[in-house]
Image (cartoon, rainbow, N blue to C red):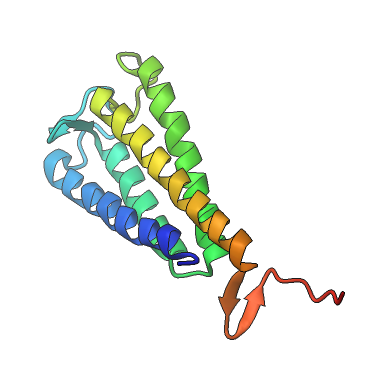
Length: 149
């Protein structure tokens, strides 16, 4: 199980966010790039900048998932942390000129849920790595020390 949860998160959430970014451009085009009021994709308010962020985060997560688990874990934890901050900050910037991503309540809740799942995936990997002594790469254990007792 070592690394599977975090790699699964990177691939699945990466694909979802990338697709949302692409479909977002179908809805918004490139008009109103950083408008504080956007178009709606289901319950979520989006603008072209928001679409670019989703596309970038999605691609970054999928690329990170192709690297060793420790790198994927760092990327997923970083995305989770950023999404937690954006989820909380969104409640304060909505309805102001600072809302350059056209965030609404549905966005805030989704960003917080994404952060929670990202952190949970990294905790599962951290626990498995601690128990297993590290990630196996090419027959060697990454992170295992060469100390002798």
